[in-house]
Image 1 (tube, rainbow, N blue to C red):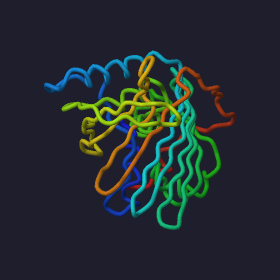
Image 2 (image 1 turned 90 degrees about the vertical axis):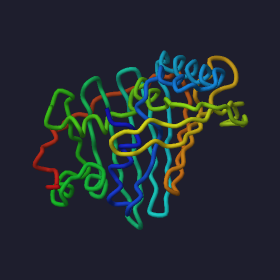
Image 3 (image 1 turned 135 degrees about the vertical axis):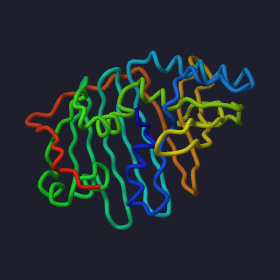
Image 4 (image 1 turned 45 degrees about the horizontal axis):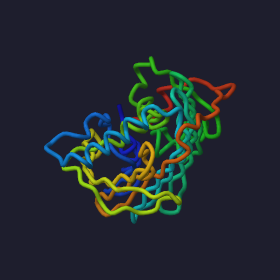
Length: 254
């Protein structure tokens, strides 16, 4: 499964040699307490992610900035469905992608620059298909990599799984996040095929179920954050009409 860091890495070629970094890893919540870490912060992390996995929905906004550009992901994730808009800038050019997940179907729409840089469309296909909805089915083996990449973070389970960290897990100073008192937990994300391990601080509510409220990362002079809220609120999701299946012929030859 691709992580949201891998989603950002899909734009790396357009962002010189650095690429953007978003969110955390594909580590499951149960991986939080490994590596001889101190018990209290590791247990707090595990309890936070365990509670989050049981929620019906979550909203999250991920932002990342580098000298080459920026990207923002605005997401409403549910148990099996989700909505996401991606807006990114590379120099003076901007890309937009909209994603809808309904069960095992993903629907996408974007502008020319978004389709080229995020999905790898050829220039001619991007111009022809810009503004139209198209679909990818999970069982489609020929498009499984694209499906996994665009579907990452659109459900509660994939959102929470990407917040997992390995040790050493330590506790940091508390702060206020969106008006909520939050405890900081510091650790390291697990590597994936696109982005190596990254230092991360996850802030969780200091009371109640300690649900995650913010994740912060730094990677190769880039900064990224993910703010999470409205836990328990499931999104209202509907499949767009007249979507056409994505065609392999639309993709540029690599």
